[in-house]
Image (tube, rainbow, N blue to C red):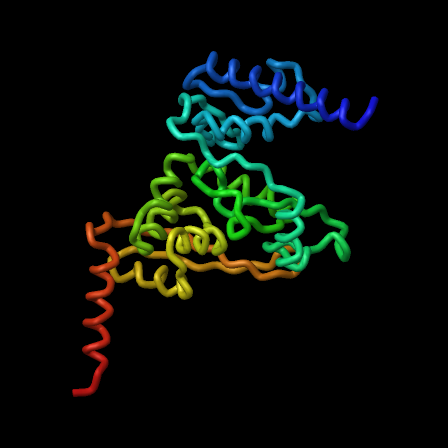
Length: 264
């Protein structure tokens, strides 16, 4: 079979599987289904990329992820009013991203050449959250780090994160992102992504520390990965209702503190 014919058959099967998944999710309603459920009911093997077909459906359908213990349930919510950007990552764009980041994972630093890992070109802000397939929103991640990121993101619904990322106040974005997983460590890289949504924040850690002025308590922990890299996590330990003018309130407190420190 020629390569062109093979690609055509694979594409046809992929479309059939995508339609079958869509029909199944519509049928189970709010109960939802896990990837294991989907594989079992549709009788598809591990070689069939169910997770990829679900991501493809995200472009034109709202499919929420609901985490229950170790399981993630996919719940169909309807057709999107506005189709998400669904352009594939071209070979030239992939090469540009790899070259710009030194052909190494941006989380652990491992590379195919030295560590024999496989790199994926990942969306920093997932497409389901409104992220675009553009150079600025892409980075290489190894399989292990990519899976770890997916596990964190599965605990957050697309609707929830789109609302957080659309919030104008950087302080409120950070606070709400921490509150989305209360009592659980949140990686610094995730909070940096949230802080820089819309506006570049060169000192996003300072914005995070300033949240203590309005009563939030956040602990910081650091640990070494098996590869020897030090990572930082932030955990929200005390939540308070945010004022309507969060950033302005914090700026007023900062000015007051600065005035008290200034010698008379």
